[in-house]
Length: 288
Image (tube, rainbow, N blue to C red; front, side, top):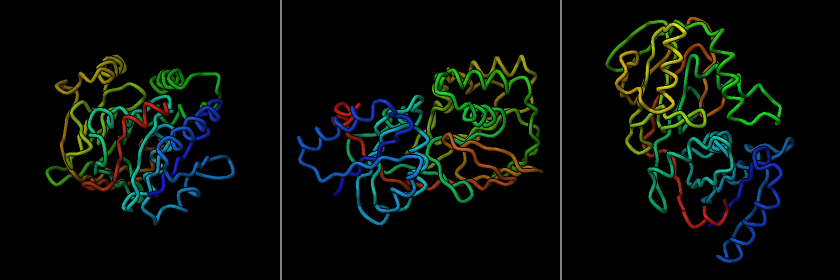
C-alpha cells in the first residue's frame, strides 16, 4: 500500500521543509512505500488526487479542514483510506476524529449535499455568512481565529434572516431562520461545539434550527453555541434525521466544511460508512 503524503502548502507555509523532513524520517524508520505531493497555485489538490483515485492507497492529508473537504470530494466511494495530520488553524474535523475513532481503519459517515460531500458540518444563515466572509479576508497578517471574529462582528450588524422551507420524512416547516446547522461532526468555526452529541459513526444528522432572533438574543445564543450549551435552549429546535431538503426562494450561500456552496435547493443525505478513515497515533506524534 502506497502512503501518499499530500501537503497543503497554503496552511503549512514556512514549515514546509520541516514537515517534509519529518515525513522522510518517518518513512525511512518504518520502511514504507511513499510519495510526497504538494499542492500549489498551479497544481490543485484535485489534480494530485486524480492520480490515486482508482487505487488502494493511504492518503495522508497534511493541512486543515479545507483540504480535507476537497480530498473527501475526490475519494468518497473509492477504496482509498484517508488520514489527517492537523496543520490547519481550526482543525475542527480533527477534533471529532480524535474523540471518536479507534486506532487503525474506521468507516465513517459522509454526507452528500447536491453533487458534493462533507464530513463535518454544513450551515445556512448567519453561520454561513460569517464563514464565507472570513474567507474573503485574504491577508496573512490577521490570524484565522481573529478573522472569524471580525467577520462575525461585521455580519452580526448587517444580517437579515432567511425565509427557508425544510422538508424531512417527519415534517415540513417554513420560517425565517437566523441559522441552520447540520452536524455530522461536532465542531466548526475553530472552537464552536455546535454538535455536542453528533457522531460520525451513527448514521444520523443532528440538525439545529434557530428562528428569527433580535440581535441581543442572537449574541447570547452565539456564546452558548461556542460552549455546546444550546441543546436545551428554547430558542433552538433540534431534529435528528438522515435526509432532508432545504429550499430558498432565491440562491443563498451555504458553508460546508469551510467551503462555500450556492444554490436555491439543497438535497442532503447521510451515507453510512461512506469513507475509510485511518487513525495512527504514533504517526501523528511523529509528524505534528
